[in-house]
Length: 320
Image (cartoon, rainbow, N blue to C red; front, side):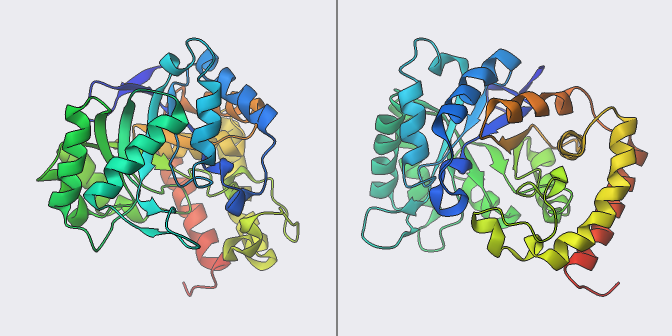
């Protein structure tokens, strides 16, 4: 798989990223770890070198499991390692946003310890904290860079105004937003902003939690947080089937299945650096690599976008 430079950094990453949100039992239940570990080891063999996690995934669980794997000689060096900070889950029975300077410094030390590494290649602010000034966040992040614990900085789930506040105070190289055929809000402002300012874009949930893979049948129970999500209701899933039916011949013409097509659709946007896919077993990562081989022709991209915009509107019960 060909690599791409992430923004203005010196990081060269694969266009498919290995996401670790699945190791959050609160959202996804208990993922079989043996299969997941095999998938992590398989990823670099397929040319996938970007590994994205967060301290909040399972309140440290994902980082700890990755750290155990990094005991394998040479495995850590095969990845560009990204993690995130934002949630304080050390203070009792609930978690809350906390990007105060002291918390960031402590969060980084905890992530390094759990990951069993001496540096984080990309350290990202997981979301916007309304109570902490950007100057305080920037001071902590610059200190971590000076100490060699963090190489590059990014943000996740930020809008344009929030990125502006941070960019004026520290050297950001990337944005990580939700982006898919069913989640296109960032096309209006955030993606053009990233193109203008040479920020890399790392799209998460390019399959909309699996909706775009076309494998979830109306009425079926998944046994995780998706069972409570409105888009996974029997009514919504039934209405989405029409859109997926329109995508199938488009995907087949490209020699792709629905999941591969949906990820290629995301990667075809000129702002995109990488699509981060959730992985539970080696077959997931092996099956998605083909998506990054090339981009979609513009007519196909727009036809798919129109089909799923209509399907989403009908699934949500919105008027035409």
